[in-house]
Image 1: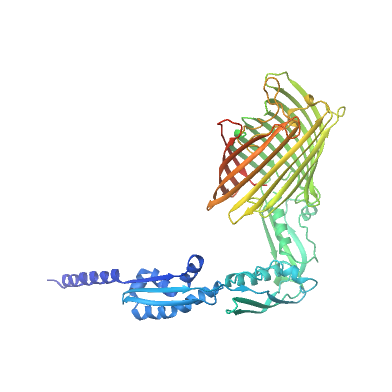
Image 2 (image 1 turned 30 degrees about the vertical axis):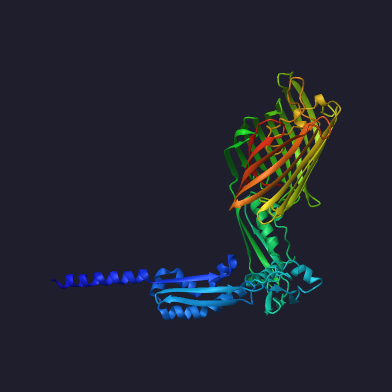
Length: 583
């Protein structure tokens, strides 16, 4: 027999013997007495648990090593407990089985969780002026009475230094940081000494770009040399330039090492976006049906940043061709003067309308709100059902106000919005009748626990006209549909004429109560109650509906699919599909 065959015959049994020994070798770790995040943190700190998770490493580990890790385990467990605020933990450890087949068990009694005393923080340097505690420590995430957590303790240090740095104290640092724990009282106290150092200021600010007039582009900066350094103001500058549409990449270099004294020079480099943008899309809405849109925007008609947009949209409910010429004014990051024109063929209630409109609109900030002052002239040709064709001309000056606040305007957990509009026309001044219309809407979102929300919505309006029948349908009120009273078709709730056509009301009032909850990742469910209607009298023509829905929290807003049932004695139900923010 050859030597090779002998070697093979010897190696095969040895390999099988080794494989058998590996298969039989086992290390099991069991942690009892705790659960949830406490148990997960213990298992993450426990060296013997990490060894047991690696089957190959635990099979190779000697029994002496297992015993060493087992002896060290109570210390690991106490460290894991202390990281979460449990300083009186007790560990009962046991080792069972034979070498190569061990079961280690740890019964943990975690004891009371320590809570923070009032933080003792001393601040020195230029930031320590006036009522500095309210300014710097009001929102410190270490409140007296809250549970001790080492991770949050370290995060609080970074939070305070980040706050100081963001306000221009670029040399801020913690001189001493000490945490004293009294396990007998289940309390912990922190003692910090923080040095803010001097406050830095903005030095020269240079904006590098070559597509806009230098004087006009400088109006985007909003920061002057000599003003206190602020990272928030730099972030606002970058965001304003990006959202202007003139640039597609903005980089800001604020180099502290280049500071002269305590003045930091800033260089802003803005790369231009394409001067033209085209868009094309299709969509579907339960109110509008299938729809398609094409459009173009000329972002820089000149070096003063004038823009022109043209859009064509068509849907089952009608088609619209619109043009908008925009001129930045005032605060050029937000304020704009618009001139617009549009031609529209649409269905409003049971009216078929052809409308032609020209107008101007000034949008700006006003006492913390957004304001729009506008004037528009419209000619509207319409008929209800098979009724006679009519024509109405109106010249409408008006004002619109929007007050909106929220923790996240895309997916709001706490916030509100209030929208008001008032406009009117006068017979003899390019209008066929005297009228005044006032309307408003309010939304409120409140958290209910960690994953649920309460959403309240209300809207109302009235129009007073010398001759209501001469008022075009676009100035009357209709309700029903996705955004008003679900369970009813779009704009189907209004007074009717003798032929049964919806002709619109002079008053409307809508209200909605909804609760939603995320149940799995970004998927959720909702239940709601809607009430509303339009009428020729205050609070008249009210209809009610209830329903349930599915929610998906997407990057472009909440996607909602609702099934609503009207409470009018019928067995009908309607499906509603909407997308967008809640405010």
